[in-house]
Each structure stands twice: as C-alpha cells, then as structure tokens.
Image 1 (tube, rainbow, N blue to C red):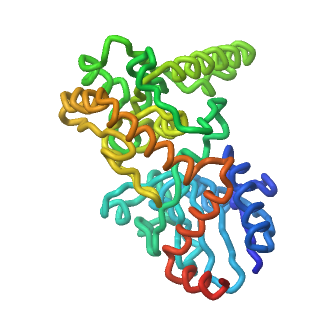
Image 2 (image 1 turned 90 degrees about the vertical axis):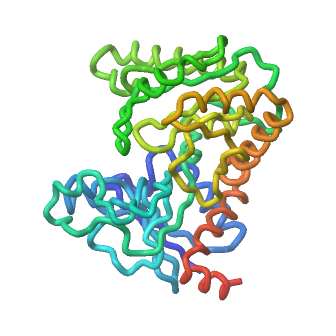
Length: 342
C-alpha cells in the first residue's frame, strides 16, 4: 500500500510541521517497517500563499492509495481551507480542540477578515481527535521517566512556570487566574510568569544574552521540576499547555482547570489529573488536598505517566503507530479500508 504525505507549508521541502517533524518521521518509519507500506514525502506551496493569512497555518494531507485522504491540521477545526472537500475525515487534530458542540459551527480566528472565507465556519466532515502538545515534547530538554516513580516526598509542593499569555478563546490572562488562587498555594511553591515568550526577546536584546537567559531559566525549571511534588497547569494562548504533558512524562501529578479539550484517548479528571473550577477559586484547595493522600497521589501519577507513555512517547514508536491507526479507524471509510488490508 502506498501512502503519500503531502506537507502544505511553503518551501520547506519534506517537512511536516515545525518541532514535531522528528515525531512523524519515527511514526512513518515504523509504519513502513511494521506494515510494509510505501511512504512518499512531498510538499507544495502553502495555503497562505494562495488564500491569504487566515489560511496560512500548516497542515498535512495523507493520501492513502485506494482511500479518501485524511488531513492532519496543526491547530483547530475552525480554520478551514476552501479548496478541499473530498475527504472523509477532515482533520485529525494535532493539538487539541474544544469539547463543545458549538465549536464546529463557529468561524475561526481571522476568517471574518477574508471575504473569500464567508460561510466557512465549522467543519463539514468527520472530526477525529489525535494528540496534544505531547507531540512537541522533543523540543524541550526535559527527559521523561523511563520507569514510573513517586515524587510524593519531594521538597517543592507546587510548581508552575510559563508566559503570562491572554487566552485567545476566553480572553483571560494567566496572571489573573494565579491572582484568584494564589491564597491557596502551599508555602513551598515555585510560581513564575514571564512577561513575553523568550523568542520575542530576539533583536530586542543581544541574541547572545537572549540565548543565555533562556538557557538559565530553562535549566532552573528543569532542576525545580525534578524536586517538585505537584504541577499546576493553566491555559495559555490556547486551551492546552505544554506543562501538563511535561508533568505526565515526569510522573508529577497535575492540577489544572477541567480541560476544555478532547484527545483520542481521553484525559479524565480524577484519573489522569485533578481538576478545579476557575469560577470557584476555593476548589483549587480541595484539589490540592486530594493529592495529600499518598495512595491517590501515586494513582494519579501512574495513570498520567502510563497515558503519556502509551500515546506520546517518542521512544515508543509502536505506541505512536497504534494510536495513529486507532484514530484513523474512527473515520468510517478508513476503517473499512484498513480492515480490507489486514
């Protein structure tokens, strides 16, 4: 069986997505070795060049010989390219998407600015969720735990660090969330909010100093995370964050607002993480207190690490392949197609 992987991101030949290209390479390499499929890579001019900024984000078309194509989109289903309409599964989400029915009837960010996009809001085809920021884990120098361990007796009670972003969906700033719950933080907490992403400091200060600051702060975070008991995750620019996946991979239990996102293998409150209600700040304290029970703490930690290792570990290519095939089989035409191949 032949699979053509068509990258829609401009002149970057044979590149799928920034940061996650190496993950796809591992996936497709294992697919070729274990299934015997022929994999062909190619690219073409980006949609931005053809349709303007609202359609300028990256996506990849998977063209299976004898089956309707599948699109892997970089972000969310509300960004729709008008030229493709022959797919069965319109998107397999790389990041995450909202767990709300209204999401599929709403126009995407920026689409109202493009007259050629009138009426394109929502998704006309079957939507299949895939994975979240875990796919970008390779860009961070933190190392996942190869075996599960308990951090219950670590020194730092709570950790969170990140950019003080305004969420594009809710309009809420991270520092505002921290302000409402900080009275419930335990004494030994390490909380850091940066004014801007470090990448934005380039050309403002010397690149040498920008790189040095980034390196020192990253190293400080890694060292603190290794000593932490519990990780706090807060929505950033989007509805998901890198933090929760870093915690999962490090066997650190996560406290977070209930995720407004959906993955192919669901993340369940009280199973993989402990949720609190942003509208009731005192619920953070209740969530934190739950994790003072060693048995419950270890259960959450183990479940989250197992979830990450099963679905997102770059050193587990069979897990990536199993997850990918399972997601594709949520599409009715691919499922029938794949069953014929077996």
